[in-house]
Length: 285
Image 1 (cartoon, rainbow, N blue to C red):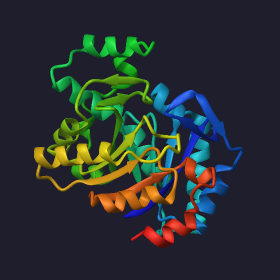
Image 2 (cartoon, rainbow, N blue to C red):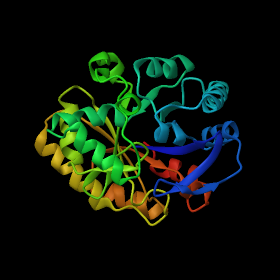
Image 3 (cartoon, one colour):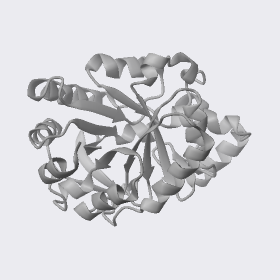
Image 4 (cartoon, rainbow, N blue to C red):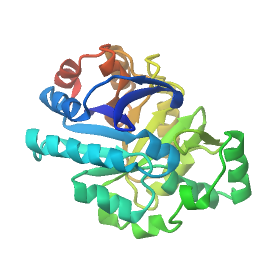
């Protein structure tokens, strides 16, 4: 299991949201490149990066691209070949995937653009989806949310090894478009369908706990993972996050015996509730 510290970008600034709410953001006034340097010095072998406005608007901002490039350069300077980077937030086209790889990003995290087509396969209609977006005061746009409906077909098996599918969970439903829109479909069903299409890495985030420091709700993850195991025999890597506020939460994950390959931790590091170096030394394998 690896400990994956998180860096969330909003207009090139490092922030943390409360339950994914853009209007409740804590800005830390920190330089993203210096955070990468600090995380690497403390032993990080992978760093999680999110473009928040990219997730919300469906495209990573140019100013965030520039910052991400500088973060990759810092990683390359500090730990070439020793620390990987995964990035998500608004990646919805094949050329955007290739752009991230060409910049030196190791893994791309894709949610809406891959998950939404699965929901449509489950007999949800565009009208159903539009109504769900309307409930979130958001207008649904096929061009923005799934600009390449055949994206899954374009992702070959080699690229799939570098794709992490983001499954953002709101209670027993799936959240899309920067967590603003909730679709009543079982997360485990979506994971199993994508696993059958040879996607093998999934990041599950409990949106109700993310950025709260309330502590992890292990039952959310246990329920999904156990259901997935009943639906598919495919070998799946699970990364989880949302609500981790203390070292005890990591102990809870370990004691659960769930097949968790990685834990994403954000706010607890910035608020100094967790010492990154200590937990990496104690728990990272």
